[in-house]
Image (tube, rainbow over all chains, first blue to last red):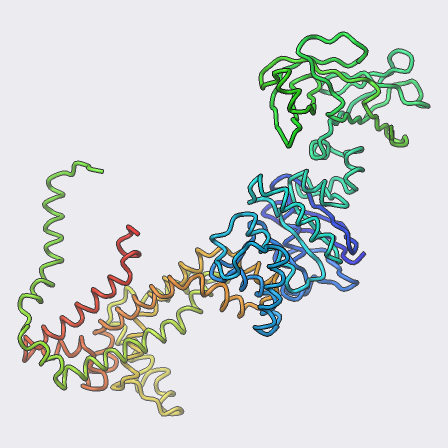
Length: 360
Length: 260
């Protein structure tokens, strides 16, 4: 691939080891919690953090090149716009640094500004800009010198919630227009899932999963991966119950599942299972119906994104359910309230070691 | 906010304030206001004023030219002995100026360890020359530039430098376009403090460069010499330094009063 990364970065007493490749025209999102090592990895690729291993771009190692000769454009977290330069001078900076003449640099900076932040006054200082405007200018600056690779570090970190959808749309267009490899560092699932072709999940300085958003959604490798894509993940021993039915015994509780076709009816350890939060129904009274799985527990947290609410439940096992905000209001679901959660056994997707993935 | 203060503190504090204010008041009350313009425009005073301006400004320039890179090295370098180097650079601030003068003589005087080579191969003699007065003033004022600039460099988020590097800037371009503009207030403050210190320099100058009218006799040296024969003339020249000192306070008021 055009860029191959396999690096180790030392951060105090721990080491961050990251390996991935990005194709031309592909967006890979490095995702992970704060402190997982995402930014360190990005800094190592850009050449501003000491790293061992290799970063190869178009067959040429970048490790011995200083950052200014790597041909990598970075839009930094918080923009990192130079406070004593105007917006236009900031965008022209990489061009001037590369030896482009003053007038040409200004013209090209004006073009980039018109393309990415048409409402921003080119003569103003960065301090007066909003978070969204700063990020647009940072993006214009990162792209001004036409880099071979584009790296974006938490582009939405300092952006107001209202400004996010528009910026996301702009970012989507900008990424699509950029022909080279693109890397997006984020901790926000919505950004990663909507903008990335592939996800690289980082936990404690290690890559725990790489795959398309759909891969990760259907087969999250870790609890964090499941949380990230918004899926319930269970792990435990699968034991046969009645005909065609099994029980998944997890540390936190038991689930009734459909026994996979063709699997020998004997206990299997280390079975993982996912459950889409939207398949969980909530009730304010004990339900009597077909769903085999019914759990009682208190509501721990209600988080609203758009018209959807994600409800964290203190059931056994713990669950995340997703409802429309209308249903949440109608049922009167608030933190602390006791509710019943139900789901059909058939909705729980099993991943049995050594077996083909369940692709219901 | 009102807070009750112990009476003893009020008394001691008032004495302290009066003690600081009295000499300035003395100068103002005893000044020969009627002939002050005549004294200051007289040939001797004019020579000293011009020379002082020249020496102090050149010393400030030297302090900035050598002090700012030094501050950068101290702020960003990660070499052994950095603490020792910093202590050494600050030493002139606490060293008695006359000792500095003796030291400069041993280093750069006609028989000095470097000075003798300067004279033999470059024909440069610093003692009894204006250049010597500039050297003495630079020696005592450079720490003020280094301290102020280093504080400025340290307060700078290092991510700006890294961002500039990623954007393709060589270190020299980053310094010129990003870093120096950001630390400009601290550089100006350091330069103004250095200028004030250079302007008032006495001990090192008279020891190292001598007291030659028109060559090394700056205002403080002229004040000292005039005082033997013409008290009013000395007061008039002193008032020039008082006014310039007040100007420095005004320029640096935000940094000195700490009230913003």
